[in-house]
Length: 323
Image (tube, rainbow, N blue to C red; front, top):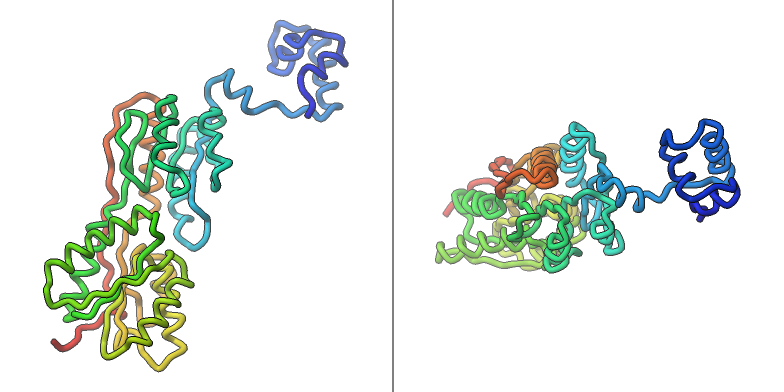
């Protein structure tokens, strides 16, 4: 990679003179500056972003860390983040994978919004100790450089379970998310509280992975075990869609034999037949609030833990059954 040392050698000037010229400093004459810029162009010189950031202390770029980009969940969230940051002159870079974690301690970004289980809490706290500003969407951390903007998972799961019970269901399955998922753990805690409260419930938990394939696999098991009308709480809509896909290949009918509710209110769910009952919240607002809180951290302004509230969207995929 071409460096300013290479440019200085070819131009016959000092490294500091090249640095001044590249940064438009009046400390070099127009003639010398033009010569240096021409050589830089000839050599295809690309400025070192990390070094420049360390000098200026700000990159005006925020890293958004996601476990993956699959499914329809992330679009609204990222749009909310983008709009919130762009209004304040910041851009975003979306990251995934452990190699990108180094962008924080190397100060290539000014802060991070994290919805990524590949980040351990210990790693995030280590970066926070170094002064990095972080907003987490998927865990609870106590540090002055970390703020939490969390989804009210327990309230959403409670709404879903209570809705199924109100419709007369006593045989209920849940299809979980990945084992390491904070959201899945929180929803399962609420489910357990409901199950413990209602002695008449026959509850079965199926391990899932927040994707359509997991929903399809869960549906196969539910069909194999079918002995009468059952309700299924899929802990996200992606898995609910997978369950729909499989049930459509059988003689069973959603809303008659198998009743189900999801979580996330993806746009696609409004087109399912019958309409999927689900838990709704504003993913756009979640992203916008995360960006707002991160910028407050960067500016050393006070912040508090924020929570994104949820509502129940009723649908024909859950019908009342006789007791």
